[in-house]
Length: 228
Image (cartoon, rainbow, N blue to C red; front, side, top):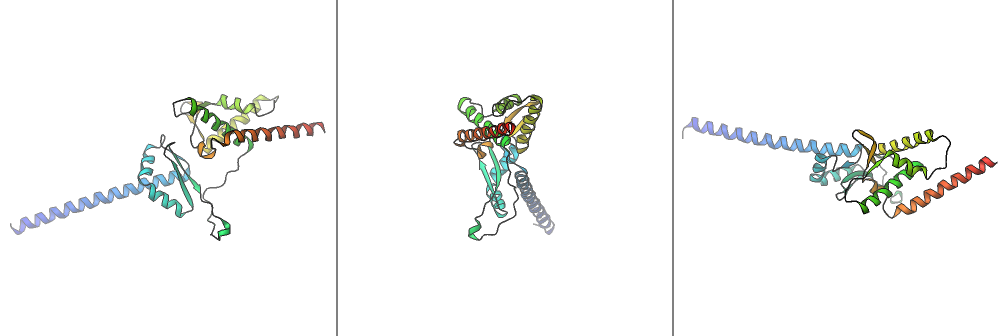
């Protein structure tokens, strides 16, 4: 073998090694970008397998590293593979243990009576759907939700205003991510299974009874105020 041939072979081998290294770096960088995309999405809100297929596959691939990353900043990753959703929850520390309380990244949400009521009614309808239907998707209409709510409120003379109030309530639940409007069907909504993480099946009946009592108490106080 001549010196020229050896030099050419060395150059070829070095070039092949550099190309392989660059490809490996490129794949590593891409995987890091994909992992970052999942982390950012989770910080902004829930992630759904049906809606975010690429992000979900990356989450499954890098679940350990993603979970570890969030634990370092005081967040827990809750993932339900059966229902196909994942979300973040603020870790709660016991003050008596003398642990340093981290600043909250996820603020506590104070639900109004109406918001709580609609969420419970949606969860009740989802439980009925799961026991009766084979389809995993539950679609409800704006009109249905308004009818559910009406039965928990006293009769009013201004029904137009009441419907506006109910629509504002529905929009708020949509903003929270528990329902999503269907494309080109502004009055049809899919109930997101994330709601099962908020309210379990055992709580439905007791919560509806409690909300009914709260509403009856409000009505009694209103009647007494009008009489006086």
